[in-house]
Figure 1 (tube, rainbow, N blue to C red):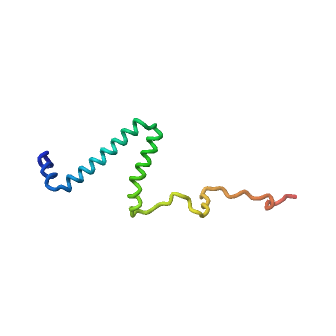
Figure 2: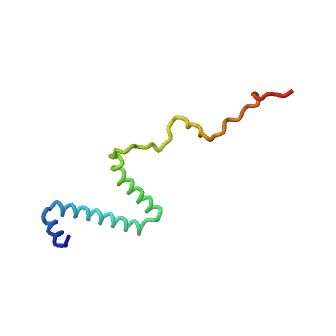
Figure 3: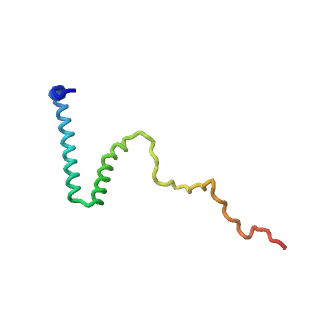
Length: 99
């Protein structure tokens, strides 16, 4: 697509231009925030800010997902013993005595 084709396409519908302007404005705002954070915040603060931003961006998509949900917390029932676990030791009262 040539530059003239893109220009003609953008002028054909004002909604396209408005949407591109909105996206570019949001990207510019995000870039300014990241630049400000890199200058005025420490590394731990920047990491925390990035994690909070990513969590806020991801949360709406995660809630609307129709994929199976996996619990990240253990269930209330006691865990079953592992198949390779040793049996509990016998008590001394059940062992036979030799006389």
